[in-house]
Image (cartoon, rainbow, N blue to C red):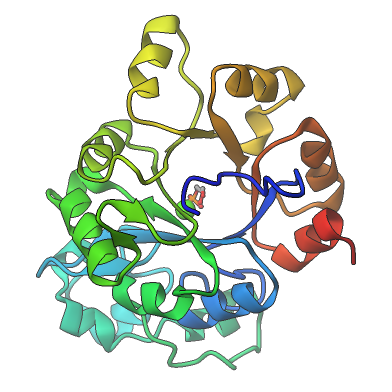
Length: 271
Ligand code: G3P
Ligand code: CA
């Protein structure tokens, strides 16, 4: 269920696909999410922000320029801040061609792929795989925590306050996570970034958070043990090399966030 922050039956970390299967399809698109499900990911990580008209949009950057054709379509609207575009405008953008231009040169299989909204991804994953929902730059989007809570309820992911399938909401903005946790106290919450540095801060975050999710570069055995001793789970980002995946598996982390979910799945569950 939603509170199961580890593969408790097998005592192995969760395979978490970063922005979907972003090594082989454009990040944060329905195709990347679908491929991650097919790769056997336990959780699919996506980034969520809010359009000018208050719709929840799946995108990593706060501007539309890197992963869509907004600069060509709207040349006078630099720097193409997502918050200044309507959901109708965003829905007509091409979020796939950049992949063939810059990430996997020549691969235009995803040309025309739209920017999904959160509801689309919730429907796609419903009953199939879990979700690691990152609330990106919430300070730019007043009210986004409530909008996310309502979207999860409307999609049937949270019923009577209870998560219906594996779900964690996370952010680098810990205040936003405290706000969200007050709305959905039964949904696991993850804090991205470096762990608390003093006892007072640990005590404060223990009131609302369930997981500490740091960069893998900050993680060693002592930190994994400390986080567990304090009663939190730990998932680490973003790990693409097999040797580093293996080291983190042996340290006992609860989840590994990766652009390469098949590679991680093979290490965790056998090829
Ligand atoms: O899931 C954590 C990771 O996605 C955080 O970094 O920049 O890829 O959102 P970023
Ligand atoms: Ca993210």
